Length: 222
Image (cartoon, rainbow, N blue to C red; front, top):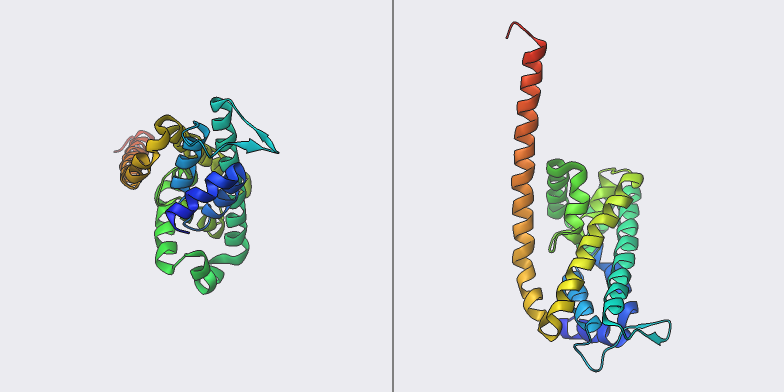
């Protein structure tokens, strides 16, 4: 879907479009960053022709319009993430290698996702779902790599909440200038990933150092 068509779809159908697009965005690249930023801009009242309508009633308060849009995105993204986890858990890697092209999941992306989970452990789920660019390739691999559903669900809610409320807030604050935030998000995403890698490396070094010190304490001969 072209970016102009996507924003028109959100502007015409409001929270229902946000919900549906964020369901899809959990498992395929569906411009989730633009969806939530534009949803926030609509909630701010920046566009005279676009309103936030819930069950046939227009929400006139901009603050509540923002909360409604963010919650719609969060609900859709969490449901989409759970669907993705289910596909990965029951389909497995062999299924994705055969049919993954329909979900834009290639073998190379699965390999990168596996490295992501190996590197970050449980933090990979909320960090991935909160990060622009990589977030569409988290839910399915989480199922493939057997992250327990009882652990995945709350972590997914946390990561999706940060993403949906954060980006909608940015769009709400910028209003009609929302596109400046959307253009910068690819660099923000890369920065978050780089920071996460540095943090993970620091934690690994610290854990290894603590482990060596513990072994020395247990062995007086050292």
